Image (cartoon, rainbow, N blue to C red; front, side, top):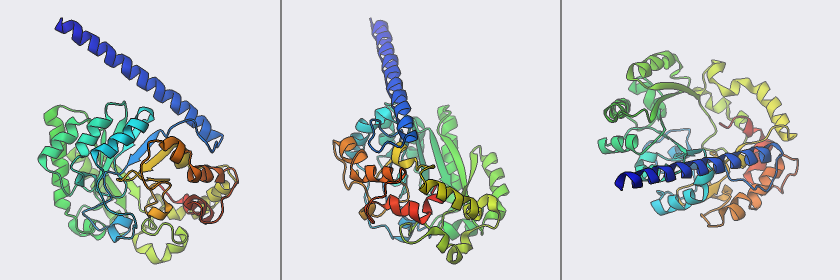
Length: 358
């Protein structure tokens, strides 16, 4: 009797998974078509959710809006009920869930509970962390909760180079915590999470890239480089290219690691974007939810005056995803410009800053 019940449960679980994957795939097909044809009002839901567990951080990185304290959005931590409301609405359609944006995710003590809840849908869960803090029980939970990938920011192989950007951070603590996380994977016999040693390349640490790559290999972590942005903490003030002279101390000479060295190509891309040939995917395929349920159009937006919604609403698809600001912003890429100041997206495209966003 018990065996029959177990078999029935497994069959039900398999059918449920098949149904969820089919619904998600159909949404993806519709979403891709709506993006291709630049429909302003969408039948589909976003394929990627970026939900910020908190906008509080334990470091003071000088090129980050949180680090320098320039963001106007109030500080807080996402509660489980808020997250459940978001995932119940958007989770069935999403391929990816990114649990980070403007804060340090591990400071949310419910992080692993959020991940477990999200994994009831066939969604990949990612987050990025400075990993200065990792209690052992949290390391265990991150492995057993179903987390798919964890990116660890390690922007230097000595304390001197690391702390130039990761102000207030301790490199040795980060490396020890990475080793703890990798050891817990082995103890649990788990293939996940994939642990990424991410090295943001800047002028003061570019000479350490290959040593960092070797360090990651020896630890058993994957390695990835990232180019630095110099306009994140004042994204909505002025054009990125005008800020380059004052912030050149951060930018490597090697064009492979400097997104701004490809200026001519970027300008050509900008011209195509303005003419409507290139389209920002965030407005169709991704949505960004802050800790309090407010919605913003991309990862560069952190001031509440530029949000597309200031709270979570049950009718999110009708009132927000197909609300006035999203619809106006999508129409930009068909040449229908809203009135000045109506949406930050029109300023982003006109200024050329869209060229440099990640």
